[in-house]
Length: 98
Picture 1 (cartoon, one colour):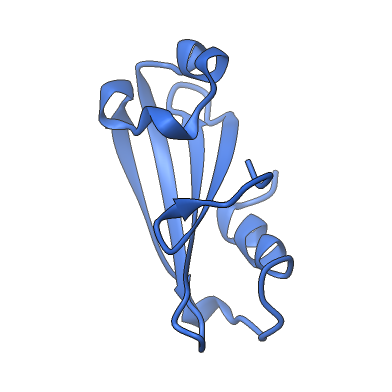
Picture 2: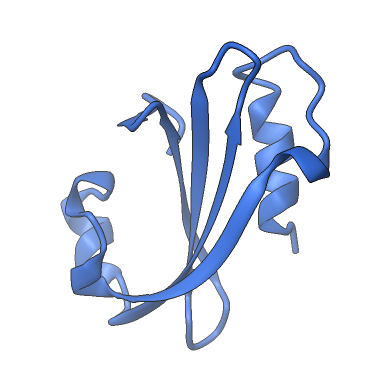
C-alpha cells in the first residue's frame, strides 16, 4: 500500500523541480460525508459510487514561488480502499492529474 505522503512526494516531482522534504508539507485526515465534498472534483460515475462516509487526507505545500499545491486522497472509510487522488494548484484542479 502506498501512503498518501508518498504519493504526494512522488507526484510533486511532475510539477516542481525543488527538493521537498516531509517536514515541508502540511497534512490532515478528516472524515467527510459525501454531501460535504465538492462534486466538481468527480465524474458523475465516481460521484454515484462514492460511499456515504469517506476519509480524506489533504496534503499541501507552498513552493518557493508561492504556488500552493494540494493533493486530496479519498478513501472508503469502511475498508480503507483508496478511491481517488485529486491534485489542486492555487485553488484550481490540475488537468490530467486525477
